[in-house]
Image (cartoon, rainbow, N blue to C red):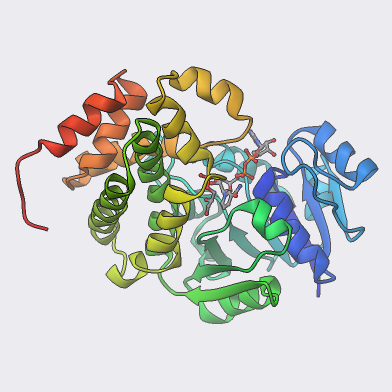
Length: 332
Ligand SMILES: NC(=O)c1ccc[n+]([C@@H]2O[C@H](COP(=O)([O-])OP(=O)(O)OC[C@H]3O[C@@H](n4cnc5c(N)ncnc54)[C@H](O)[C@@H]3O)[C@@H](O)[C@H]2O)c1
Ligand SMILES: O=P(O)(O)OC[C@H](O)CO
């Protein structure tokens, strides 16, 4: 038990804060939007991001960043990837010395092409590395919040600190594995969102199970190529944060990324879909980062490239599928 600060009161920040608060930790959640904090404090619910879930009295929400961080033993960062650097810059002066830091954000920064781990070290310095960890894996916020069985992985460079975070989160319905492979866990969590957009588009276009299974499998192949080039252990990509999250996000109707693809497959524009989504779909920004990273590192990323063209160059999802199917034949 301890004091926990959760930076981010979206669906995932709220669900993870509930897991920690239900365990008896004094849990303070920082909300970017003051009205979200007010809603949680007043009504014990986050109606905007996690409707219908009653939140425990041990969970406190506020828009005061300094107060949220005061005395925290664990700081969990769960903001969209494009906001992580800005939030960490603001939080830096108030981070309690010695606090463990865990990120549950999935993404790759657009301009720098950095993983969240790299952004955190960039902002906080290398001294913090042993206290940093990354939580990822197949986990829809809504299912976690209602206590459905879920398995995730926490990766960190230092074993004692990673185990401490594993213990802090684990419950009988939220099973937490540990890993030493930060890059592999982060790459899997970020890149699966791009493939989920492709899988959603295939469904929206009316294609069947064969197309989806092909995309999942060949998606995993390109995730593995890029992750291994960045230094990941190939086995990590077959784990919870690779294959596990890929299957969940490419097949689960709760996925925001799959929804973006699905609606575009049905003929809606990206702008129109995003305007009505109400949540972040990390795969949209990550598609650009992954496309740029693949080109920079000379890694072939055919599915990612087609998703990029559909999102950023106006290519029709149907033509993207045709082009994927008609690439030069190659070995598996
Ligand atoms: N929702 C899930 O099921 C789930 C599961 C695993 C991982 N994740 C990851 O967690 C991260 C957060 O996702 P989410 O589902 O909580 O998002 P969400 O769309 O539900 O909420 C987004 C949150 O970010 C905040 N925000 C927006 N702009 C901001 C800014 N500039 N500065 C600070 N905060 C800002 C919003 O106020 C809101 O609280 C993403 O990287 C996502 O991929 C989500
Ligand atoms: O709803 P999505 O597509 O952002 O996916 C949520 C989680 O990342 C699933 O593990």
